[in-house]
Amino acid sequence: MTTDAFTSVVGRFDGTRDEAERYDRADPLGFLRDRFVHAEPDLIYLDGNSLGRLPAATADFVADVVRDGWGRGLIRSWNDWIDWSGRIGDRLAAHVLGAGPGEVALSDSTTVNLYKLAWAALDLAPHRHALVVDADDFPTNRYVAQGLARQRGLSLRLVHSDLDRGMDLERLRAVLDDEVALVILSHVAYRSGALADMAAVNAMAREAGALVLWDLSHAAGAVPVRLTEDGADLAVGCTYKYLNGGPGSPAFLYVRRPLQRRLRQPVQGWFGQRDQFAMAADFDPVEGIDRFLTGTPPMLSTAALVPALGLVEEAGVDRLRAKGRLLGELAVDLAARWLASLGFRLASPEDPDGRGSHITLWHPEAWRICRALADEAGVVCDYREPDRLRIGPSPAYTRFTDVWDALDRTRRLVDSGRHTRLPREKARIT
Ligand SMILES: *Cc1c(COP(=O)(O)O)cnc(C)c1O
Image (cartoon, rainbow, N blue to C red; front, side, top):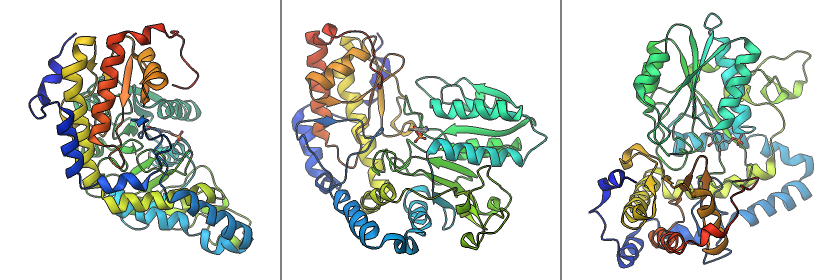
């Protein structure tokens, strides 16, 4: 059991709860906590990177859209709703994604958007026959890549990144050549939290003549994303993680403006059609980002995103990043003090600049510990295969004392051995 991986942060904190309280008092984002629902005040929720908390304003906002928009306005409400995808897309572009107006739209799920943009990008390079994906990327991304490879007769090149440290640029460089049409990559790795160097990857791919399609699901709202500045061409991502849009809220997609007119997506639906309500006989994609839309958007879950996005804008991603980084450093520091001797080790990059807002700890009993924390200690975090406990203290509503208490409860639980009484079988949803 090495404790080496922990050493980099020791010394910054003194490890007392008083200190965590001082950080809370000095927290410029402390005011945000009350803007979220805390239905169980004693529950410590460290899973905001899987499903963000419910903002306090969301229920009424959605209820208004249901009662007034749907109930009273009926079909007439579409005159307003029809623009929401673009309006919210522009707000995401400006405040979260570092992109320009008309470059981001809300649409479908991340999985579907990944497929649409990858397909369109592959059409641009018909003489290239390879698709690159991180062997350790989030499952849906690998499955979509496998499907595309099968459907289009492409070869799939896997980059074997380090489970804990993330993508190694030299390993990526080694698979890039003039056969590669597209690289699919996550900005923040879902398991370890490793942060990929977006500018460097884009430059490397461009040199090889390939496009990169970024998945920003674990990055959006947690770390500053600079799509324009970092030379990104294509991106997709979720809005229900750090953006708190609610379960299944619509995903976003980004296409750099000069590329838009050259791309045609495979799902030719009427929301991507020029002059949609002319009901023309043949598909003719509209100019601009809307050509990547498909069918009627889910307005109730789109509505749920509106108050949530307002909170992220008010906080500012730079401030969220600064706090998220510090919460992660505190978690690593306390884990080093208390948990290393109980068999844990850090399974994330040591350098806080090299990871997003979640950290991961390895332990052979991670599954049972995760279950016992939820069932008996009031701490909700994630289990991730194989043998990892993922801790995502979302900076919008997590206090430093929450992290302190969660790590304290973890050490007590593991020290007592209570988790060993649980069955080893895994649940359907981990
Ligand atoms: C959460 C997540 C997804 C989820 O995609 P859905 O289509 O919303 O289910 C996709 N990619 C990554 C990297 C994720 O973290």
